[in-house]
Amino acid sequence: MLARVRSSTVFGIEAADVFVEVDVAPGLPSFTTVGLPDSAVRESRDRVRAAIRNAGLDFPVDRITVNLAPADLRKEGAAFDLPMALGILLATGIVKPGLIEDAIALGELSLDGHIRPVRGVLPVALHCRRRGVPRLLVPAGNAAEAAVVSGVGVIPLATLHDALEYLNGEREIPAHRHDPDAWNAGPEADGLDLADVRGHAWAKRALEIAAAGGHNLLMLGPPGSGKTMLARRLGTILPPLALEEAIEVTAVWSVAGLLPAGHGLVRERPFRAPHHTASGAGLIGGGSVPHPGEASLAHLGVLFLDELPEFSQRVLESLRQPLEDGTVVVSRAAGSAAFPARFQLVGAANPCRRGCASLEACVCTAGEKRQYLARLSRPLLDRIDLHLEVPAVAYTDLSASGGESSTAVRARVEAARRRQVERLAGSGARVNARMSGRQVRRFCPVPPEATRLLAQAVSRLGLSARGHDRVLKVARTIADLAGCETITAEYVSEAVQYRGLDRGL
Image 1: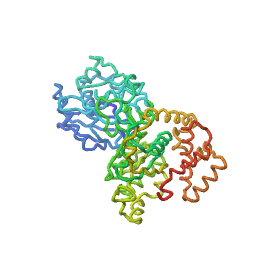
Image 2 (image 1 turned 90 degrees about the vertical axis):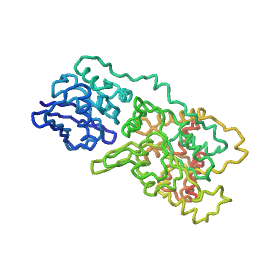
Image 3 (image 1 turned 180 degrees about the vertical axis):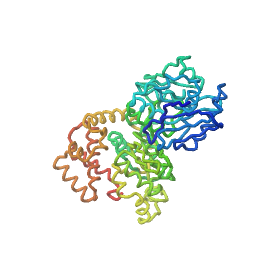
Image 4 (image 1 turned 60 degrees about the vertical axis):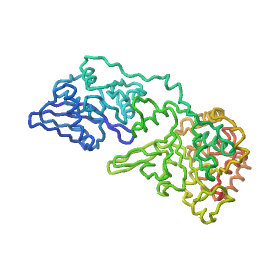
């Protein structure tokens, strides 16, 4: 007998339909899976057989053929265990047709019939809403994740018996509901606060500008000067994720398998800090079947690269496309996948390879310093808006108070971002750092005295056209923080001061 169960697979962060066709025919006992399955899918036959038998159900002693259609789409992972099992039970008459015909099923089976959580459920839930599929059968551990998508009935299943009783109408399992109170409660405090930072008034000012406009930031200073401390507090002054943004971030984390079982939305902006030995695939994404890398896991958050010149130059140059486009496209023989990567890059570097405590105590030659910082190419530096010197902290600053709290700074950042959202409404950009060249010319007009100052900066610093636009974007953000619609020469001057590496810092 022939049966068909609808399922889904994820490529990149987009889900696609997969129809699990099961044919149970007389013949020598066998279990064959076709349709470009990977090793995990081929091993499903043993899990499915053991799960059905250990659940106290009859497994057919016949020739079983499972086809995963469309056959030209590669299938991976253990999420097809449940639809395979349901297809076999449907073909043998144990499961009644009806409810299963307008549902998508996902889940990994354990040998005792329990259903384990799988990755990529949130993109499948979004796919169900787009296609008008009314029900999604998922493991109980994935129910909170899928339920954030409205308009889809998410049915949580703990065991294979739960699925049988629900599909046969013997038991009513209510759809899992998303708890809006959990979202409105906001993210939990992590204990970090900008007031912990002693001194560094200029650095904290630059951090506020970076947060307000979504700008990339590079900090240069001796070891122990506070670069990492400042970077880790950037997230405390960023606005909280909106609901739509949280769904975007959660979809990436779900595909990567980093979302804990029973977890709903990611409520905090991601902060990713990969080691400088990270490979290109680890940072950008890759694999025979493309998976997201650190750049995509930091989507709408912060990607912190400590010891920036120690990263492989090839790895650093691979960041140029996502910094410009906000998207990573990974092409492999299995196909191409696009991952969102609109992150804020925060880099930290020592002035020299030895990491000398201060410029006065540095024993490196001028040539060694230039060679070390030359690992950061000009095209990459062009895409970093703020170049900041972070000197060692003086003793008097260490004993002083830390200054403003993250809450106070975040209030100004949120006000500046609201102005940007209103100004850029309908353009697809939400922050100044993402303005196109046409938007820069429209929203960043400068008075004659600021134009002369900018012309001198371009001439003396050798700014490229991209660097010129980045200065204007930073000046626009400074004006937004001041609540001013006009970009003055004062704001342009401050923006130029943040191009330290163009001056040969």
